Image (cartoon, rainbow over all chains, first blue to last red; front, side):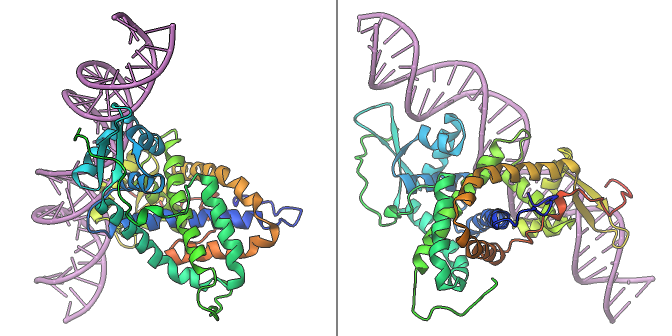
Length: 174
Length: 174
DNA sequence: ACCATCAGATGTAGTATTACATCTATTGCA
DNA sequence: TGCAATAGATGTAATACTACATCTGATGGT
């Protein structure tokens, strides 16, 4: 805790400092996320964007999957998807295997939007990254990956950015 | 940054890796933020929480300041403050100096809420921090601070957690 | 003293988020 | 075959976010 820090008797190994810095960075990231979303042409809300990121990171998902990931009910998920479909950012596909399921996939526009936001963030972070001494980059990279992994973030591989062909045939529009 | 060394003797030495890791971490942080907010007793939205964080980090602010920080109009800011006041998380104070102004401050509940959320995040990040090799902590800490600073995040000093007395006298309730 | 400006608040309005209950279509299993 | 369970969609409703236009009150400079 940063609070009544009793000035640990044992010279701490810098654990608190790392944690504080991490929390600061965390708040900053949230602000950054909000900002990069606000400065966008289309008006996508944060929940909507999070849904897009899930699709971008994990590939085609069901409504229930996205809902769970976002911590909302299925009905809320359905509603959100309605809006994203209306905005042409995602598409619904029926799977032949299980006709109850609906697979959600990003449209090219959806992919472009995620890419755009990513680029914006990249822009804001470029100078920071460049200022990190080369010798530090390895540990910093490792630490950041650990953070992402621990918090439950998906693969860093942006396979989705190179809009590969959708693997689902549009059987019907639900 | 403690050592803003001009670096880059050789172009791109792990620069991309750091950036990717940073972006991953960024997405993870957003998800984490949403989660730590969802698992809360009181129902505070992300915009509301961001407002609280601004107050917590920067101390008493005006409506316009918070609005600017959050990237919304003044009227939106006023509305948001209305809700936060109704939830007893912030308080409005008139300043004698400029009677147009309204200073917003966190109530004890507000402070407690921010603290609670911080603790939750801390919990999720503890294991990560502990896993970072001691030798790495210094660079990692510096890098994270740089990120926070660059993105416009405030001092890491959590002075506000030790609920010091509010310096404004409640003259009237607007 | 006058008036432009600033800080906030309010009226109005559209869209989003979210949940609960309920309904349809499908699937899986006994 | 029959029926519970699953995946979504829909009806309904409360709350939040957001902006634009407008209004009040207070400052500050001329």
